[in-house]
Image 1: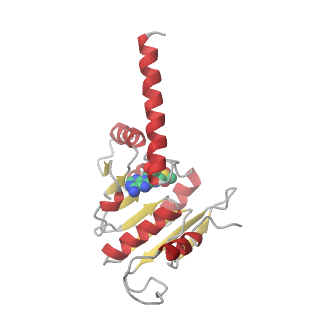
Image 2: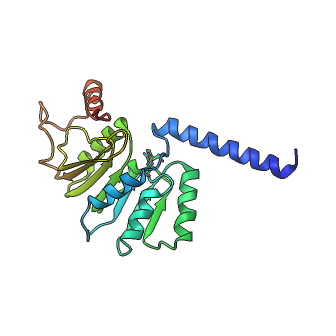
Image 3: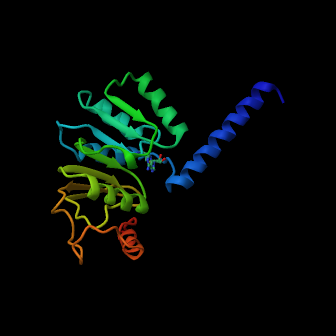
Length: 210
Ligand SMILES: C[S@@+](CC[C@H](N)C(=O)[O-])C[C@H]1O[C@@H](n2cnc3c(N)ncnc32)[C@H](O)[C@@H]1O
């Protein structure tokens, strides 16, 4: 086998392995939002907003690029752990000259979200539980959250749009107000969720059926 073909093969194998590895680590593959989902997410927000628009897990850049193109005066930020999708999104950003878009290759879990005006996500039930904990712990200001497919546990969405696709995929919009957006907890304290509570929250945030 010629050397060039061997190098390409090794590169492809390493890339696939790294995507599989990060998928196992994070619990979600870098599957991109569909065109309909992107449109619905873009349509669900009102502009102008004060702080940056942040995508929690920006994947190949599908949503952040659509946001940055539609709102060129708005700062758009993406956090992504998987290096290959992140690299592709960086190449797309520079080829489209999107100066208002910043893409970090790191976990959003440790990111500062308090200055954001709108958070976007397309995660999975466990990821929504982790996000809920982070918001509860760190976010003291009001903010909009737009989630593709998965609900934010214990929070009442202000709007749910169902896409005209096979799954009738829901797009949830939450208006996060730290003190008032929750169903009150029984013990009304700020203790971490127990394993049982987490299970309960997860079972309430899976993809709804028709
Ligand atoms: C289903 S994809 C969504 C991609 C993009 N937001 C979109 O709508 O097209 C979810 C992405 O979140 C990333 N992800 C999951 N947990 C993450 C974390 N804690 N920090 C950063 N990225 C994460 C995954 O690697 C994956 O690429």
